[in-house]
Image (cartoon, rainbow, N blue to C red; front, side, top):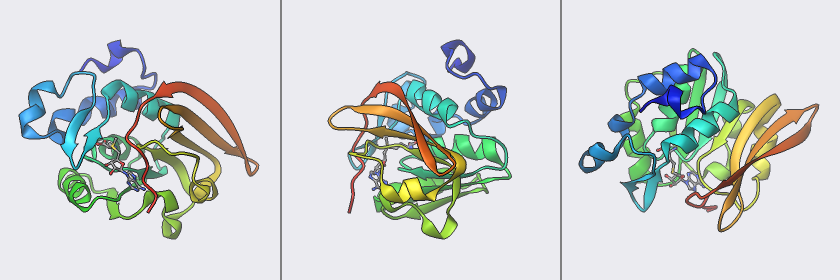
Length: 196
Ligand code: SAM
């Protein structure tokens, strides 16, 4: 994938991470020939690994930096978590997945990434034991921003989350002096955030 020429990624650390973490290592074997095409791919359980340009837009918007503590909701294949782990190292990435088979897939795919932890749980509740988080990224479409995620975002932190039904608006939320500043990054389509 020609990440630089895609024109989305501005930060050289983020470009490096996208170049280092190969999407083909996170897609099912029979779809490897499509790994570099800009569309989502099925990863089983009716779920998808997101479109490369969408992952690039969300990662850039998140503004991750070295040392950050990151929460991802929706581990799926683990690709997004792997990219973030390279950027924030020695910081840590916690990624939550609600489907057991996919949590196991993500764990396997992320074995080489020592600063990522995969948790089988309902991510709409966040991860109170590790909060607050400098960055929160949600990889599934929420009806509204879960209260737990608002609370678990650190002061000065950034959250990127697709919100709405059936299409989503991608929201970039920054917490400043306890208040949430919201920026709309446009329309996207995601698999739904399921609340247990
Ligand atoms: N980030 C993933 C990757 O890099 O492959 C793609 C994520 S996929 C588009 C969305 C994922 O969110 C699915 O695996 C789905 O099971 C998961 N999901 C949906 N609702 C969830 C919830 N409440 N808690 C945790 N995961 C959830």
